[in-house]
Each structure stands twice: as structure tokens, then as C-alpha cells.
Image (cartoon, rainbow, N blue to C red):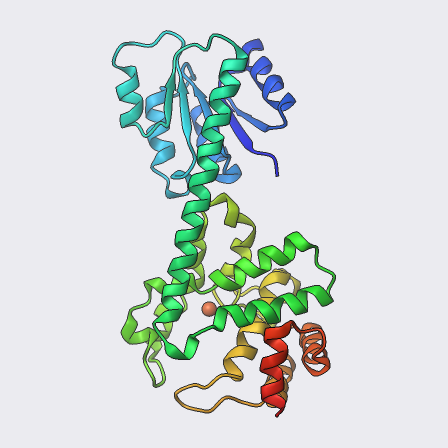
Length: 329
Ligand SMILES: [Fe+2]
């Protein structure tokens, strides 16, 4: 995927020459001509870098930078302020506004490219580090409950097998793996007394738990490397008949990755011990999935495919095969 750059500047030959130059370096370049469109485009496009020129008709560059950085979704996006005739205090003003760098004029386009490449490398590094932190966060939530130990790893196995049977591309399978590992990261906002409560939840407690898909989405949203899995995180508790949450999506409105993930998630919950019941044998768990599909909750065709995969066994990786062998024993 090419890096995306949002070029904020009034329309001019100079801007067009910057745009062509960056496009020739294989960057995806978008332009905005005023403050309002820059604010809107930055949130929608989530570029890897913003080059913000001073001299817009409706707002100064320091003000606009501050407003862009005020949106949590833009936190990880480096913004470079460009003011060809800077005042001595402008660099400090830029830092105060949250800019990653303040440029006066560049001696050449090659020098500008060098600076752009450095910032994009740094952005990528920070993004990967932040992704590791989010993955650790998800692991820490799972570690709170011995019953969930290994849950995410197992649903990766199940979901990837189901995804392979649908001929998903390797990049989609990789996204699916990450989505499985992170799908419940929003539970970090659920108090432990609710998360670990052995009995049934009250209506109020259930409402708190039901916020976790949207919270998980907002935790992952600032990271470019997680952008493609946001729909799976947000929608993994939707139901095919529209009775799920958080948005009440139905049928094909529910992203395929979310429909796969929820089957793997429910199956693993059924075949592992819970405080109120022992683990179900695989065939009983599959029967429960088929019943939920008949209710209109799960994707029927995916449930049947998953049942076939579990029965045939040979498609499962070593870890999955070992587990299934134990269930059938
Ligand atoms: Fe969940």
C-alpha cells in the first residue's frame, strides 16, 4: 500500500508541482484548499503525512494544526507546517500546535523528499510499536481469566481455516488473524467485576459489556496498520437478522470478516469450560451453531462450511487437529 500524503495549500502552480513530484515517487497525494476541507479530509483519509502550507484563506496554519491534532483520530498523523518566510518564534509555535516539523523553504525537491521519507519511516515505526502495545493489551485482557487462556490463538486457527475454504487472499487472512487477536480489546474498558463475574449479568452490566466493540474500534482506529480490521472489530456481535449490536446490521451488511470471526469465537466458547458448564463436545457445539444460524443469528452457509471443516479435520493445522482429536476421543 502506498503512503498517503494530504497536501493542504491553495491551488497554485507550486502546489501542482509538489503534487506531481510526490506522485512520481509513488505516494498517493490528496489536496485540500482550505481549513474546513483539510479537517474533513484528514479524518476521512487518515493520511500518513500532512504537508500544511501557511496562507490558507480561512485559517492560519498554527490554528489549523492545533485543530487537526485535537481530533484523537489524527493523533498519530505527523503534520508538517510550511511557511516560506518564517518569524523567529514560528518553530516554537509549531511545536505548541502539535506539528511534527516546521519547515521554512526547502533548497530543492530532493531535500523535501528526503525529509518526507524520514517522517514516513518514523510514522511507520511508531505505528508498528503502537500495534504491539494494542496486541499486548488484548493479551492482558485474556490473561485475566484462566478460562480464556489461548482463546484468541484458537479462534485464529478456526477463522483462518474457514477463510481459506472461502479462498480469501493471503492479505485478507492476515487481517483476519489480527482481527481475531484484537476483537475484544475494547473489554479493557469493562470493569473486572463485570468481566470476571461468574453469574448472569444485570441489564446495566450488559449495556457496559456491549460497548466493547465500539471501544475496540476507537482504540485501533488511529493505527494505519489496523485500519482494515476496524469493521470486523466493530461488528463482531452483529446478527444476520439485525438483532445484534452495536449497529443492528443485517445479512451482507455485516462484513464477511466479522461473520467468520463470530463463528470461530462462539465455537471456541462452546468447546471450552465455563463456570456454569463443562466444555461441549465438538459435534454438540456445531449443532448449537446450526441452531443459532436457524434463529437468524449466524451466517448459515458459513456455519455449514465450518461444520464440514471441523468434521473433515485434515484441513486444520496441527494445533487444531490435536484439539479436535481430543474432542472426538
Ligand atoms: Fe466480543
